[in-house]
Amino acid sequence: MSVNTFNTSIVVVIIAVCIYLQSNSKNSTYNGKSTRHNKKYKKMGDEEIFDDKGMQTFCQQLWESDTNFLQEDADYELDLGGKARWNGGDNAEDPLFTFVTEAAFQRPTYRAFISLLDNYESDTGVPETVTPQEEAENRRFLDLIFQTKPIELAYKFLKYRGKIDCTPPQFKHELYNLWFKLYRRTRATRQFDSSGFEHVFVGETRGETEVIGFHNWIQFYLQEKKGNVDYRGFMSYDKNVHLKTIQFSWKEEMKPKGSMFIGTSPEFEMALYTVCFLMGHDAYRIYLDDDEVIIKCHKTAGKIGTCYPQLPNKRY
Image (cartoon, rainbow, N blue to C red; front, side, top):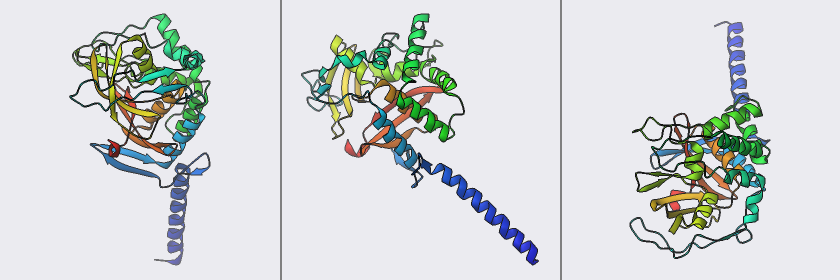
């Protein structure tokens, strides 16, 4: 090999290394903070958990941005009762919520969110019909949460990570499709009987025996207050006061084990779950004020099938 050829080869190698390092550098920071340990995958049951420092940094920033968060003791109080069993009876004599400061429900995003909760048929297999008024309510809710910091952070993070390439109005349209467009959840029917919003935030019933979805504390509180929910006890206990795993019945159908954040705002949950869905993984490990949380997210018909938080397995 001639000296010139050798020198040319060295230059090519150096350029390739520089391009690689530059690319890695872009993916290893978010808002100026180092995110290296980079991406790791760990098994949880049959699923791989996405472990990413950039994602974890974003989630903590999202958590801190939630100015509409309700505080335990000041804004609400829980009575956990006894520990529930898979095949046991009711181990909680009293409702889960002792009180909630309902003045918080007059805040714009809460009020708009609550207006959506009565827009659905809970039984899967029963077709949903979206009226013009209901569509207007959906769009009003999105308009309001797009004025909040959590949604702003979600948009910036997804754009930074290359998961979206759109303007904020286009992003709002995408969120409408992801959360509110109907799809078939029941194989036995050709009817559009479900949506991501209904499943995650409102809840559904299946086969006259089972509650599916239903991962929102506001819906839980309002349904409990109406007498439609019977809280039956906690399934696991953890120092994390913002996340509970519980057992309950709704409309006399059972949810043997379900989990939900407590006190979080609608915009926080919409932002977090949207990011998890668009990042494209089934499970994430995040930390909120040093409390470890697993977020599960699954797709149905190309849209959000379900998304919810749960405690790490080691604490069950």
